[in-house]
View 1: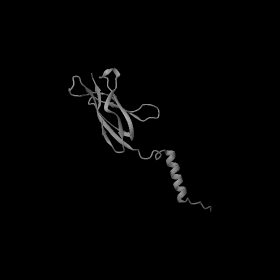
View 2: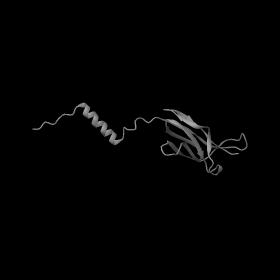
View 3: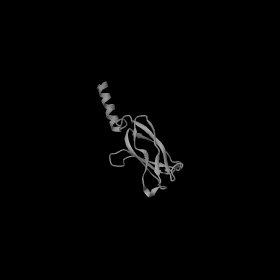
View 4: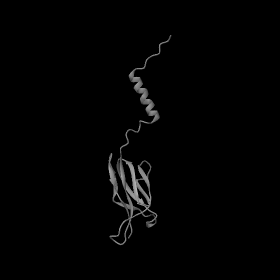
Length: 128
């Protein structure tokens, strides 16, 4: 009878690591995220009028190759909420109810997301 060699703990660990890498389930590590939420709003005129929620799109980040971004569809309530990876990103909105494709901006045009953060940022479409 031929004896089958026994695997030692180092070879078992190495095999588990290779399997994990091949399956890519552990190559990403923990995803560090925070949540960005707010409203897409139509403002004015006249000055002092009440902001109105509008449907449209909010983009967090830069839509270029190699850059992180999220494209968020916003319904008529104007509300949006999205988990995003940590980092600092521009935030901009667009609405078919505003300016024929002109962008809408938050009061601060960037958002800095840290692990576990809950950031609120309204995006305003300012009518003149």
